[in-house]
Image (cartoon, rainbow, N blue to C red):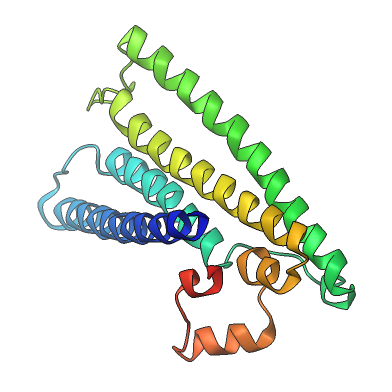
Length: 197
């Protein structure tokens, strides 16, 4: 059941990161058009910086789940690789739990912000007068997906720790080894779900 949920979560995260990439392309296009209009026609799209800012924020948060599932989030592992495997497994789990607590608090506060925005019909203080509930809703969706991803990974790591399956914890939450980095850079990266089986 847990493996099925992890695979489903990976598919949703992959879709979210593709949508985020598309949003980045749209943001780049809007800014490019605005720059050309300013340079050659002394006019502007109006709000290009605001729109691109929203798109960037949404795209970034929608990529978080994919990043943690594929273990491409930044890790400081100077000493980590020298620790015994069981200690590394415990540290990996601890890292996920601490990240989960932080993201949980962030998601809760973002939901309160959105509720306040909706209640007050808040708009941006720009010429576009964007209803802030629109970008904040998409931003919150990304945080919710990230929170769900972290909960699933924590449960999977706890189950593996109980069984003494330290290799599974490494595949799910450990820092990438040099071999894994080389394999990813050369195009031989396996799907994250294969590591969850």
